[in-house]
Each structure stands twice: as C-alpha cells, then as structure tokens.
Image 1: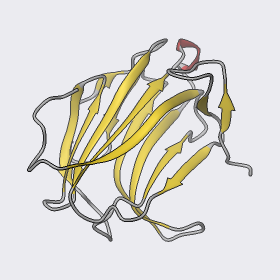
Image 2: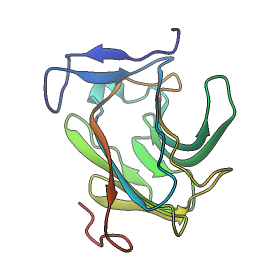
Image 3: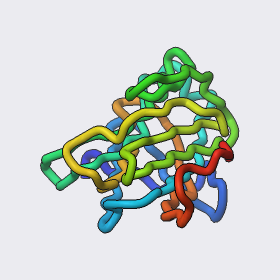
Length: 171
C-alpha cells in the first residue's frame, strides 16, 4: 500500500484517467504466457514541466517477478527529471531529451525467439540490446517513481505479432 500508484484525472490520453507514478509509487502488472514470439508493448507517457528537477522515474520490463521476489530486469528506460534526459539502462543507448507537457509514445519490441529488444521513445530508437535475465519470458511491467514525479501513464497495451522479425517502422 505504501508504494501503490494513484489513479488521476489531472492528465489523460484517452478516457478520464491515467496512472500517476510519483514519490514512492511502484505499479506492477504481471503477465503470463509471454514466453515465445514477438511482443510489442506500447504506452503513453506525460511528464509535466513542473516535474523537472525531481529525481529519476523508470519504465521497466521484468523476465522474472513474484511479490517479495525474486525479480529480474530485462529492460529499463530511465527518465532523469533533474537532467531532463532519458535513456535505456541496457545495451548501447541514445540519450534523448524528455518531452514535457504532452503525451509521448513509448514502444518496446521484444523478440523472445532471438532474445532481442528494441526500445523507442517519442518514435525515436533509444536502444537495441539482448533480452537479459533469468527467464525467456515477459513476466511484468513495472512503473517505478524512485522518489520522482509525477509522471503519468495511459493506454498501456501488449500484443503478439504474427510477423517474422521486427517491423522496421518506428511508430
């Protein structure tokens, strides 16, 4: 309860609400059955300009998760609100400026058959790297404030693709 995220109507990409990830917030959604194939995860993120200078917030994918542990991270997009930049904490990464006061798309493409990941922020490639960790599985998404915020998320979705390889479009 001390780390739960709030539902907010301050900003919303669609519908009346979004998740407000701030302060001690740590919102996790557990998946099952995502053990092979290509999976595309999308979300929209809103960082108010008033959040600048307030720590680092994270969008994390885990290959292993159970309440109380064990945990294993496979991707981690970090948003340094002090510096106004974001990056992937895995693989070769581009550092991009954080876009404030508008909804920005996040897209993560996970190919569990080849153990590769591509991460996008605002339709720009941030990183390409291996799917790291103890398990070949997308087990959970974790929105973690790390004392930062607020940062808002909406329209989080995952879908399996039928194609071979990654789509070369960055949208």
